[in-house]
Length: 102
Image (cartoon, rainbow, N blue to C red; front, side, top):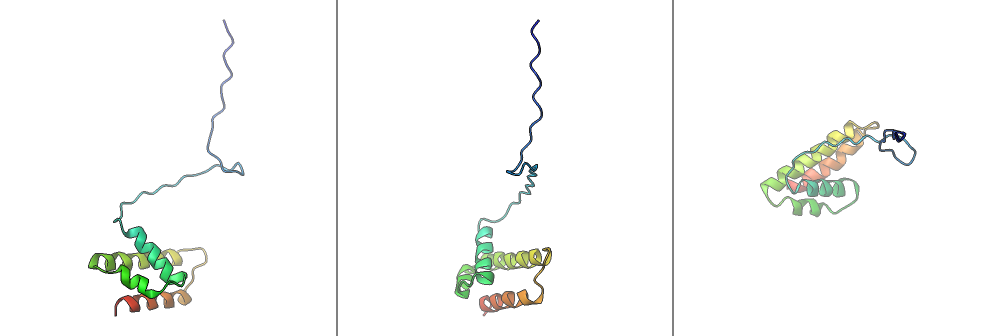
């Protein structure tokens, strides 16, 4: 009889600091241009992109709806953050919305 091989200890995924990794994946089905709407919103709100970029994006009613949803998504995410940017951040949203609704 041959001795049994030692059992291998259980393995788990860790990061470089040997801390267990939790992968929290929340898949959502979104329209194909959703990610573009988020990028355009972020560019106009926080990265100094010309506001015409947003105006060019909202060529159709669907795009206008997606862009509005992207702005709402970002605004809610900001307010739920650990350090929310309250009133000072609303001016950027107002500027973008006024520009695309002319």
